[in-house]
Image 1: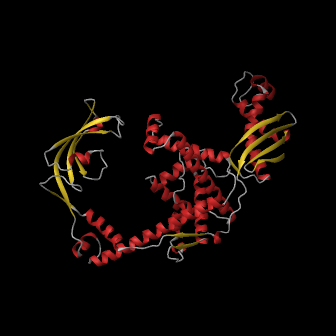
Image 2: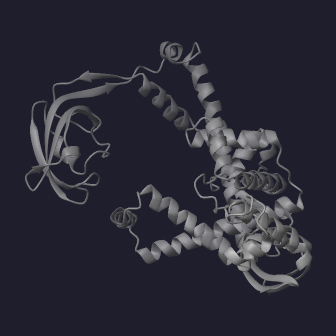
Image 3: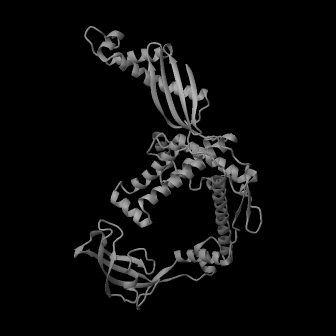
Length: 465
């Protein structure tokens, strides 16, 4: 086999491959055998049909095509390895010659561009201090008290913060809206998480009162329609929090005193803020790499990422064009603005992936079975699936290489975070290596794209074949 490689651009290459006919012959013989075994011709046993008869019946071109389909992928991979082509995505292949002497084809494919990485030890970012105030502790303590709160009926008009039981009846043009009717619904006044205009309608009313108001429905079959809402107030209750004292500490925790409970809360908040500090460092390091490491992006990788992200949104909306238009309206964006933002985010994602792939390659980052298993378990939890079920779907959908690429990138980013200089606003050095390895790995994961278990062609845009 002879092959040449021509760089069409910094991100695209054309391979030209010529395969002598003798190298094609084993595949050609296998093609004759396969096609012959499927033919039933009087006078010949199955699988024993001569080649000349097969040529007469189906044409030699059909047999050659079968042989080419088998040998071409193998020869493409061989040529790519010979010329150290780091291909991204699938190639565009064209057969340029086929006769009794040789078989030739060209394959154009996007490649990972040359990327010059900075000295990671020279990277520096500043993050917020880890400060736990008494108000932080009070907020968490109040949240715990809220879990043990009781509701007590009151005989007075409704105020913000009250809990009410209400009946709702929604009508559009006099017709009742099926999914706009409810009985005995519990609602926290002032939360504004049910129907626009509800709070204004019931504040100042007492149990037994009714009120009507108009609003635009946001969900259901009549979403976007102007509706009249009739609300009946059944009861009014106020929330009573238990006193913050030693008795409450004993009831709500393993501690005997409120002071011990507050110390424990303070320690927990400090751990959370330390992780938030690490997340901030991760985001700033990634932003700095995106801004400073310049290289051209492969068009096919960006397109694959754009298509994947758009598919995720459209799929979540049930491929309903009307819902998609409503989604854009709620986002306050035109289709052009949405497309521009989608492309910008896709380009950034591909850039980050390629940078981390290069860093992983330079550091010879390897993924162990234990690391892959740990990542699978975390991803399964995000999908609210059993780990074994998630792993099976990943394997069946062909997403395992993409998932392993993610783990490798996360390890590379964790290494960059450890190498960089991170200081807080007070000038203190932040040592992220003090975190547990699993915590550092999760920090590196951040909001990176999760593996798609439904689209075999999506390879996180930057995965090499």
